[in-house]
Length: 374
Image (cartoon, rainbow, N blue to C red; front, side, top):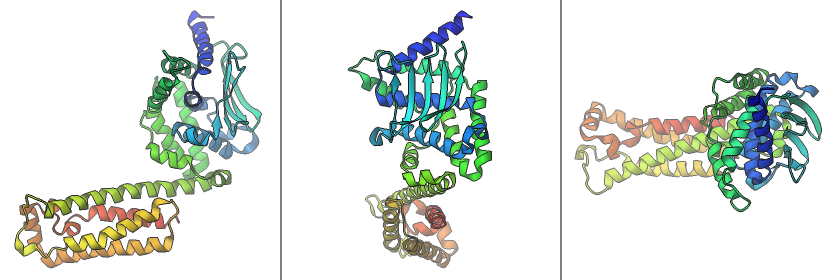
């Protein structure tokens, strides 16, 4: 046996022992990253026993996104038990503290991982006397996170894993194991169709070290138990709704920020006001007919369960505001174009919606997409 291989195995064993000294949160993040790298051991969802690759994959995804988005720190849905309790050589990720999902072990004297089905053992992969790339990466991450950490300074490790969540999942971007792990999501996407699109994008973000927005991930992790239990299609529909609302919120904030800026520039100190001939521009009316529907829209989507009839009325109100701006623009004809250039009207607020319809149109577009899924 090569000395390098022996060292790697010993480092893996030492890493698992050190893992037991860290907080539950740090253990869970490190184990989750190990889980996501070890999808290379499965590759094809259809190869899983039991004929339910969709449910099995959803369990893995839910566990991972719940832990990585920090939701589990509040909900405690997933635990990270280890055995034996004094010098641990096996670590688990488990749902509701009893249903094991994934484990990493050196109990047999060599590194191995297991994907579990409920309380029963599922698919296991022993790496013989070698340490895989995934094993070596787990060892290096544990060493980096636990350096200088004692029983009284575990919070230091927690801060380090917070940063680690946004690091690339694989250090060796050309690793064959990474390609194989990525194939799991490619095959999952083929198997699940459009219902697997979010998870393929989610995993790619982890590979690239550019994870999806953590607020978005938290919302997905907080999907109700009944939806998760209903299967991949129900989860995909709920994720689509969450993403549309998330996008709509950002577009509303973007438009509100612009309207505030336009109002200040139009009426604030310093002026640079446009000519008197354009003072009938509907900036005041815009604020009246746009702010209230925008506020109503924000309130309607806050709880994540908007009412379709109320949403339709809000869309109609915003569309009326947009049409009012266009009507004013048509009435002014070529004059407004020349004056807008001369007086920088887009920044000054006069006829704002007429000259800058894009952000209101973006809000309307997102609101209509939401209406189509509720």
